[in-house]
Length: 175
Ligand SMILES: Cc1cc2nc3c(=O)[nH]c(=O)nc-3n(C[C@H](O)[C@H](O)[C@H](O)COP(=O)(O)O)c2cc1C
Image 1 (cartoon, helix red, strand yellow):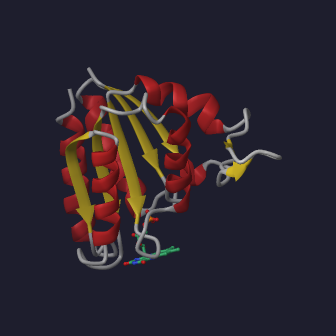
Image 2 (cartoon, rainbow, N blue to C red):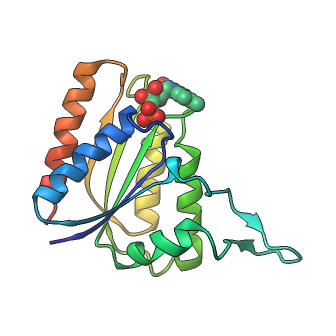
């Protein structure tokens, strides 16, 4: 049994990327894994990082949902699942500000395993910068990639069906 933390970023509750996340979660739970999921795009109080007043340091308020709820799970996680849709050739802002919050415990969060799930209206080439960013982040964090599911043409239900199948299978493969 693996401890899995899923981080999603889209604000669309039943949108394409959260449908991939649902499928992965279903598979991972069916395989007996422990899943904690944070839908950053649906979290009301998640703000971009700001400087602490009078200090050059970035601040994470003590009341921050990430700090109180997500970080303890992340520190314990074996597998981190990053889920985004393509917004202006990058990731969802809520996922980015969640990743920015890794900084304080950057070292402690290294050497995990990772899964990436991504959807986008455009083509495989349109998704390239986002997928490169995910690959670079994983390299930097020394996270071993277990699976990447990418759905270009997310407006087509047949593409989504294929991605959902792949995501569920990726979830089931986690041990
Ligand atoms: C703010 C915004 C920006 C977007 N930017 C892009 C883009 O740069 N390229 C693209 O192909 N699709 C873009 N799209 C389309 C989304 O990638 C596509 O609709 C995706 O399936 C949305 O997934 P979601 O419902 O999980 O957020 C954008 C959509 C929105 C709402």
